[in-house]
Each structure stands twice: as structure tokens, then as C-alpha cells.
View 1 (tube, helix red, strand yellow):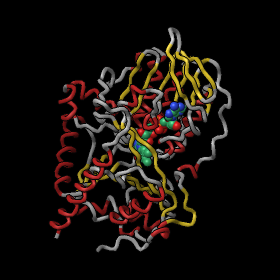
View 2 (cartoon, helix red, strand yellow):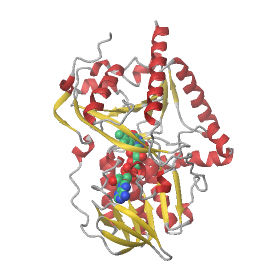
View 3 (cartoon, helix red, strand yellow):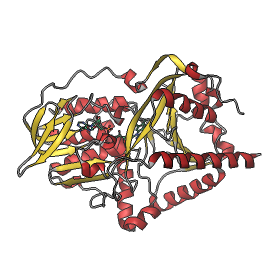
View 4 (cartoon, protein in one colour):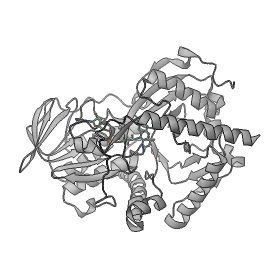
Length: 447
Ligand SMILES: Cc1cc2nc3c(=O)[nH]c(=O)nc-3n(C[C@H](O)[C@H](O)[C@H](O)COP(=O)(O)OP(=O)(O)OC[C@H]3O[C@@H](n4cnc5c(N)ncnc54)[C@H](O)[C@@H]3O)c2cc1C
């Protein structure tokens, strides 16, 4: 049996181990906000992640009285928990999407991924948000030779038909990108970027507060009652009347909005940060400072922290939802399989968050009466949530700029699905089994 780690049981946890995102170590606790909920407002935003804040920034700056509430701390959801990897965020290929909605609509939807990536860089620069944004590029690694061939074909097609910049990296040159021999080459998407998720969130929060919005943490919305001229929202801190409501709850969507809950598949995503590493080791593992991901069905994503002191490694390591104390060692095992250099390195942080998938693997933006939504980023929401939040705010302001390529797309559900993804453990187990089989087969043929 291959020796993956010498750190058994609790030995895998560093002395400073905690189950909070490592990103929160770099931002002071948020002490602003209001304990009181106003009785009325123009716009009520439910959820204080990137989607909600980005919508609020538009409406507050557009002169609408805006209130943002969250059931927990501001930014409690994925927006302070993610891996900080920024891509074009659209999962289906042009070919697959064209089969669903026709070639022209497919192009319009895919273009929004490019727009979101471009927009977030401009937004961070223009707003002067200090959040370690870097256009480092992504190394997308193939876990088998067949996947490498497929990656090369997709990259060529993307360059030819959509102008997506990419560079093919064969296995013989892989060490230039990543300090591992576990993969069979890959493709660098040079326009993809990295960010410090919590610094970015805090920067946005400060902007929203400065724009005059009222921020109310620990204020769960529990009821929506639509009336002729407003929506009455029942919350833990009393009732508020709003002309428009933005539901920005993504993976944390509850029965507050059963229509959305029926369309969202909540999935836990798990992540660890290592203890501090020697600079030479980080340079060996991430010589170009790119973000990285792989072609496994149950994908791994990882990077060096912005200060290049730790490795932040994420993925889905269990069929069921588990505690970070369980997922941490499992992620460590998989990290050490890719980077044997890390097998004796301990974990300082282990945490998770709940992302939202949709049945068509697309983000969705829309309105039902006075209630607007933007969500289901399928695990890639740093740029898309910010971008579609912004567009939602513009829609509420009645601005023509608020139009998106997603407008008018159906938001599918499945018969009898009410928001409990009972089928997930089976699917995850099946995907993981197939990934493992493929890796074993590839290893045998490597000789
Ligand atoms: C571990 C992990 C790694 C990830 N890595 C990446 C990555 O590298 N790149 C990438 O692009 N994306 C990544 N993502 C996904 C990305 O973080 C999300 O898509 C994005 O943050 C979604 O933002 P949001 O504002 O829509 O939702 P969230 O930030 O999740 O915010 C939703 C908020 O709604 C609140 N809420 C819910 N219901 C109510 C209610 N009834 N009343 C009041 N408040 C309510 C919640 O408390 C929560 O704060 C990752 C996610 C996780 C968990």
C-alpha cells in the first residue's frame, strides 16, 4: 500500500487548528451594521454574500433606500469560505448548451462568463478594493491521458470559436506549472485569476455601507407576503415592507422561497489550509502562482494563499455531508496523493460551505413579481455572483444595462423535487468510484 501520510488521527491537525476559514484570519471581525430593522425600505436584500452586496451597491448608489439582512454574520455564507479562484464560471460547453437553447442563446450565455471575469477585475480596480486580485491564470490538469486529449480539443475549440486564451501543457512540461507528477498534462487558461475571498467581501461590505445601505446581521427572513404595492417580509427582528426584494441566498436557500428551493441542489464543498510552509516548498509546488483544478468528476481545486505561506486545498471528499474534522484528514490524504511533498504537513484550518447547483448547471437570474433572484452558480460564483448581483440591482433601477444573456432562460426543476438532494450521496459515490478507476487504469498504463 502506498504511504500517503505519516500523520494518523489527530496528528494531522496543527496546534493552531480551527474550523473557521483561514481567510477570516486576515480581516478584523465586522463590527458595523445595525441591530434594528427599519419598518420599510425601497429594496430589501436577503443574503449578504457577493450577490446581495453587489445588488445593494447598485440600488443604494441609485438612490433607493436599501436594507441588507442575513440570518447570521454578514458574509457568513460561501462568500468568505471559497477558494478565491476566478474563472469564466459557465460549465456547459457551447456545443452542449446549443443543444439545450440553440446556438445564439448559448453564445449569449457563455459570453456572460467572459463578461463576469472582465467585470470583476475592473470593479476591484475602480473601487480600489484591496483584496490580492491577481490575473495568475489557471492550470487545469488532466487526471488521465484521455482527459488530456479531451482538454486539448476543448481548448482548441474554445480558442477557435470563442477566442478563449489557453496554452496546452504536455506532461513532460507539467512541472513548470505545478510541482506534481500525478497528472497527464493540462491546459493553462491565462485570463483566470485569484483573489482573497474575505478581503474582497469586506471591501464590498464597506462600499455598501458607505453608499448608505442599512446592514442587519442575525436577522433571518422567514416569510414573504406579496401585497399590491409592496412585499411584507417577516424576519427574526420584526416585519419590514419593501418595494422590491432580492433573494440572494444561493446554497443557503430555505423554505422562505419554495419555488427557488425546488430548483436548487445544495451541495457542501470542503476545504483545508495547511500550516505555514517553507518558501522553497511553495515555490516548488506553485512555481507560477497559478490557481489549479483538475478534470476529476469530483473536482479538486487548490492554490497557494496570497502570501504564499500555505496551500489551500478543496474538494468533495465524502458522499455524505460531514464535519470539517472528518473532511480535513480526507482532504489531506488526497492532497498528499497529488503532492507527496505535503504528506507530513499538518492542517491549520478545515471548513466548508454550501454551494448551489441547478439541474441545467447554469446560474439563474430573474424576477417573480417584486421578488428578484440571482443564484445557482454551481460552485463557481466569485465573479458570477458579483456580476449577476450587480445586474439584479440595475434591473431594479429600471436600467437597460441590467439585461443579461441569461434573461428568459427556463429554470428547471424535477418532478417531486422539493429541495432535499437525497440522490447526491449515490451520485458522488459513483463519480468518485469512476474517477478512482480511471486514475488506477492510467497509472497502470504509465508503466
Ligand atoms: C468551500 C468553497 C469553495 C469555493 N470555491 C470557489 C472558487 O474558488 N471560485 C468560485 O468562483 N466560487 C467558489 N465557491 C462558490 C462561491 O463562493 C459562491 O458561488 C458565492 O460566494 C455565492 O455568493 P452568494 O452571495 O450568492 O451566496 P452566499 O455567499 O452563500 O450568501 C448567501 C447568504 O444568504 C444568507 N441567507 C440564507 N437564507 C437567509 C434568510 N432566510 N434570511 C437571511 N439571510 C439568509 C446566508 O446566511 C448567507 O450568508 C466556493 C464555495 C465554497 C463553499
